[in-house]
Image 1 (cartoon, rainbow, N blue to C red):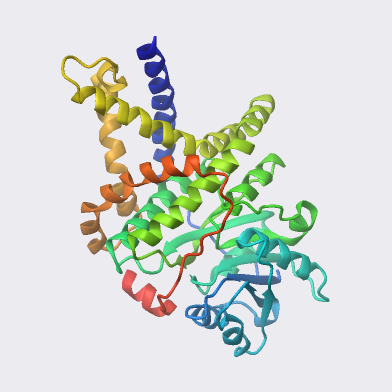
Image 2 (cartoon, one colour):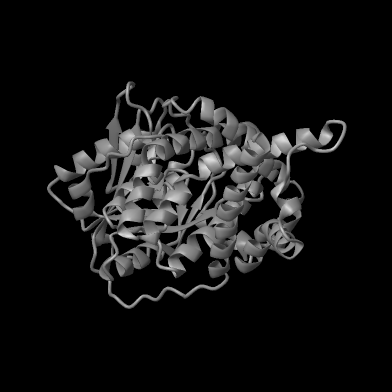
Length: 412
């Protein structure tokens, strides 16, 4: 019975994996975004910052050069529980607002955003849209043009393309960059092409102001972006992915910093999955909404990865024991014409995504160490499951000061 149970679980995960494989085919092509509307929407650009004096200046200088009418956007830096000179750096730039928040009992980006939005609603000037960035980001100068276009076309929540600011710094930052290129092309793009919901990525996010006032932020988990995405989907509001609107995010350079960041992500992911997955799945089934069912599968990924890890360890351990294996593997039972092509494609998805994204050829050399990075997700996910009730925000230190011209020049 144990063997049968394990085999049933393997079949379930095989079907979920096959679904994702089929879905990825729709990311092989993309429709180029066009700009047809003149700049009319006004924007409040919110920059979340906690002890970011080293990098926040470069982002502010970048945002002040946006190719968009200056009178239609303002910049607000949320100096959240800062103990360094972040606010002093911000004040050096005329017309940029340093908004200081001190609350040692409510730490984290979600709380900072919720506080800032309440402050925004009380200001004399109101904006058509709120855009959120992280202090370590750099932003393509045409970003607001694409946000204006999407808002004019009726979209209320938009996610820009999350690129990497520093993929050449270390094998860890390279692996993070490769992961993001994969997700952009074979997770976000297929859903956009098929009319499903896209998912927010924590920065480079644009929101219709009226929607935020109606819903409230209310996302204070360790993955506030995913939590708010699910709340939108429940209300039949589907975030849209804009491939052309680029944001360059700083990735951790050291393995330790990357592990801490990924642990926080997975802890938050388990928390959101536990609270939202089943209600969203049931809602999707009742409404016959594939967008909601797909979103429920997406939220389930934390458990998918955890159980996949446990099943794999069990099968490997079984193979190492003397005698014939006790447990059956789905790949040994599936017909070769099905199992082999799927296995090959799963391994080839990452270089395929890089090829489609026209990544610098030097990054292909980093694929040698990418499997190490990928497999370390397993113990991180395992530990996150048992510590998912930890709501303590762990800050990732950012020190890599680059300018937009340097980043774009390295990608050419």
